[in-house]
Length: 295
Ligand SMILES: C[S@@+](CC[C@H](N)C(=O)[O-])C[C@H]1O[C@@H](n2cnc3c(N)ncnc32)[C@H](O)[C@@H]1O
Image 1: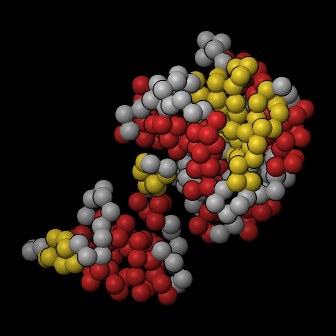
Image 2: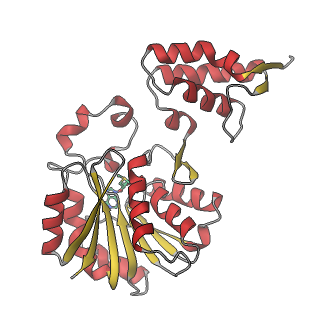
Image 3: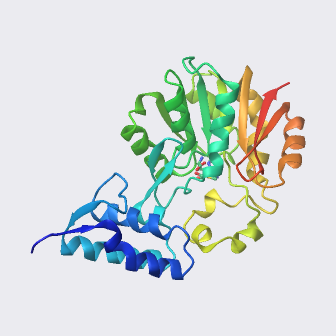
């Protein structure tokens, strides 16, 4: 069977129209990402590019478009998501990284200006590793311990670390912050050496709000990465009491929070010896990250 040569826009135009009709605002980009996947190309295609494509590849492309028309997010179809400066692999056990979480990276860059220093960092609830690996990529002499209850997500961290050449500075720790003395177990693994930086983006959606989330979130992001219990604050109740024992004296803590959770979390943290240094807003103006230091 012969391949055909065609420009990208001519090929995808009918599919852009179909996706636009069901109000998918990113129809053009989605079509190009799905076409790249069908052609097994890692780089983005542009509308004016001329491509060589086989009948089989066109069939694959149309079946991916069908999945998109059925509401599956592009990131879940291609199992990839751009975050900060890298393209991350994701799977069904990981949260689809959110642009809002990049606020946490910006906060660290502001507080730790010397990118050559050696920092020992803990990523609590690491998911795909998008936060910890992005930081490792910025601070080239640092190391990150990735901590998650989900073994499958730690496998994805390993894959991403390998793809980015960061595996030798990454440690994978399979632990659960709801078990007793998880901090003692962690310090044992770390030979009693504490951390300069602790980061976390824990699950923080109140349980009864999950059903109100968009289908793209509630159907495809794992519940364990969303559900923060009755008021959304359960994970903070497990994590915050242990932080002072895990961080070095001059260390800092960067925690992502949900909309309007800043006061509850700041006052909870104060009880456990953590002082709020600042709140950092995301691009929509929501206080998204709290920075703490120890008293
Ligand atoms: C909101 S996701 C964040 C993932 C990633 N850091 C990101 O920003 O995309 C929360 C993560 O916490 C993990 N997690 C949830 N409960 C946990 C627990 N009890 N102990 C350890 N990790 C947990 C989930 O598996 C998930 O990977």
